[in-house]
Amino acid sequence: MGTGPSQPSSIKTESISAIDLDEMNKYAKLQTRIDRKYIVTPGICNALLANADVNGRVLEINTQRNTPYQSVYFDTPNLDLHRAAAYRRRPRFKARTRYYKQTNTAMLEVKTKDGRGKTIKSRTKYDPTTLDVLTEEARQYITSITGDTKIVSNLQYTLTTQYQRTTIVDLYTQTRITCDEFLTCTDWENNTLSFPMIILETKSSQHPSPFDMWLWNNRHRPTRISKYCTTLAVLHPDLPSNKWHQTIKNYYPVPVS
Image 1 (cartoon, rainbow, N blue to C red):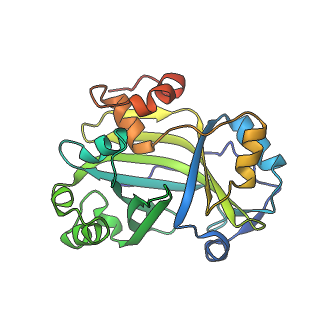
Image 2: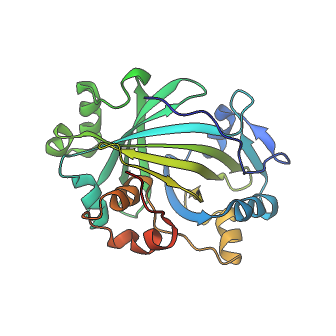
């Protein structure tokens, strides 16, 4: 499995100075954070980047500012992790591998929530040649974080997402925003769905970021969307979807089988 070729980005960052990954992580690694997501057009995304009150730097890797991402998600045969998110059960988690094409590296990631609703992301290096398979060592790692031996023992490949990401960090507030475009998702039955909008995600440790403030001041509110859960609810209408019903109704196209 591998990410597709990069596409010409609609996100304009020519006026923003670059920052490399090591330097960005010094300012805003944010493995424990508050996430807010928004669905916008390219025009709104570019207006945000041009006008938000930030000391912005755009992540640049190997001279490229638009990074191809691939995430492979795992769930049980009954999709228990999807259902836990749909019904807002606690505790719950997501498990995925993530591949970075530009550096040919991969990570195993586990996302959980703390008692205050902050996202905690734990990650460890992974073999890029086995992205859609969980090794025994990987299952042990997930279990060490979640404590859920039963669920982890039944995890199997469920969904692949591919998209292109632009990341901007604000040096003033040590917050950042990711801008994801060209999202395409394929499930275990090879059903495919492409998403036509840009998904913004702000990441801050406590207070709303300047990116959030600009969006709120321009009447853009956070939207409930999960690349994994919302897509599965669209591709498989028998799954619970009330949590994302309005998002699906407003933004999602009809899936292609």
